[in-house]
Amino acid sequence: MADKYGPIFSIKLGSHRVLVLSYWEIAKECFTVHEKVFSTRPSTLASRLLGYNNAMFGFGPYGPYWREMRKIVTIELLSNHRLDMLKHVRTWRLRLHLENYSTWVRKGCAETGVLVDMKQWFGDLMLNVTLRMVAGKRFYGAGADCEEGEVQSFEKVMRDFSYLLRGICVD
Image 1 (cartoon, one colour):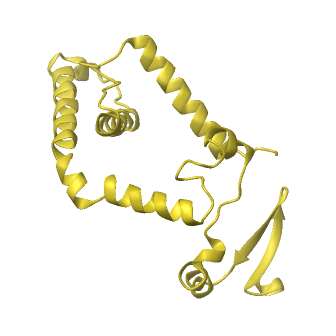
Image 2 (cartoon, rainbow, N blue to C red):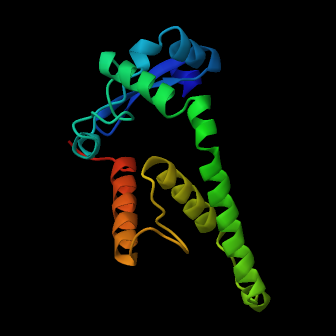
């Protein structure tokens, strides 16, 4: 299409017009020199309903509010100091997850040739680490801080939230 229409052209995807950049140099310039023009994501029905009218950090339009939220997130959640403070949580969760796996192997479950879903295992680990760091709770595995019904409810909400946000919602 670049040969026919040139290095920059737009196409219509559903109800949205999309800019297509064929060369990495042009894309780099858009995201460095002209970043403010391209910073705002399109508002969707799902992001408005699930993101409190786009007030959540990942859904908000670029502007003073978004810049302030980015500053708070960077300083309070993603700074080296904060990550070092919570390093023990990550280490502890990983150690506990590995101990649970080792116990499973020692019980002889591995001798039967059962497949281990590592995607699920790593997903549980990452969710446990994240939730322990953010909410102070453990939702999965032995020693969980909540009941099974709460875990299932939380899993369903997270799956639905993810599904709705990644889909195309007609406004």
